[in-house]
Length: 74
Image (cartoon, rainbow, N blue to C red):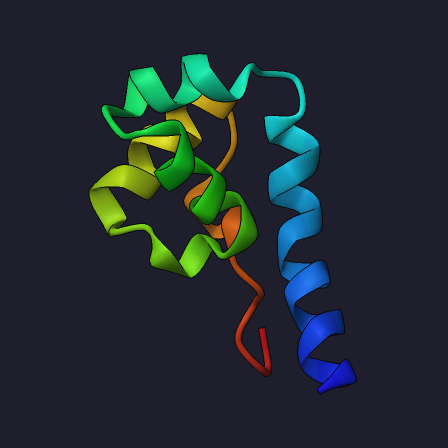
């Protein structure tokens, strides 16, 4: 269970670092989702569908891949 927690935290770090420059309410509005939904994306970016992730990457000025852990071997 501890390993899952550390994986989740590692996944969130780059996402939260970039997102911390923005107001959650503003980003949620820009994405067209509720603040609660946006917060769930911060906790687990894998919940986002690709179009949402693409739009969020544009808002944050990063790549979609920044939201996810690299696959083994990458």
